[in-house]
Image 1: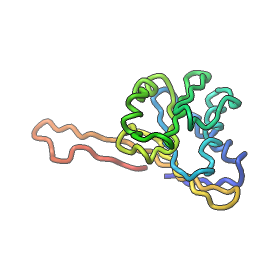
Image 2: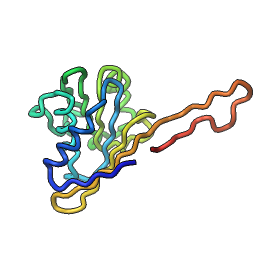
Image 3: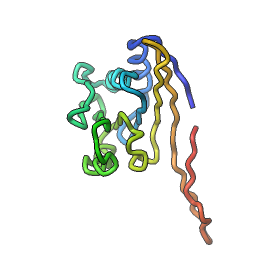
Image 4: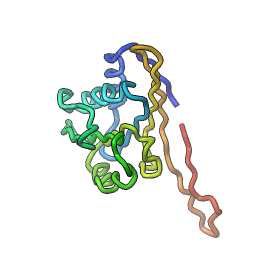
Length: 161
């Protein structure tokens, strides 16, 4: 787990740009934070780091998903805020296809916890002041243990690092 504090939207943008290093098709980033926390500012930085047109990035609240062509991949930007059945709608939007073709960033991810990819980067954003924010970043992985004889009752383990 890593924690970053930003003092203004520009630093939030730069944090996003730095986080984009190493992302590619199959990467999923989930964002959780209140309205005005800086989710879209962070996505603008991610887009810049991936080589997408930053001017195109806006909150996809009314269109559910925005698609931004980037240098070596596509950035899919989803917003679950207005979804009634976020888990079902994620499947309908083609989450697996998006992951196969690019980087997926999901705002308001806490509305569809059970439908999220098992491997993802989870970012929780806290408003700590008028312009200051705290970003808590966790890499979430799912490890399945395979046994040659009888499997144990709990073979799925979730590990946070």
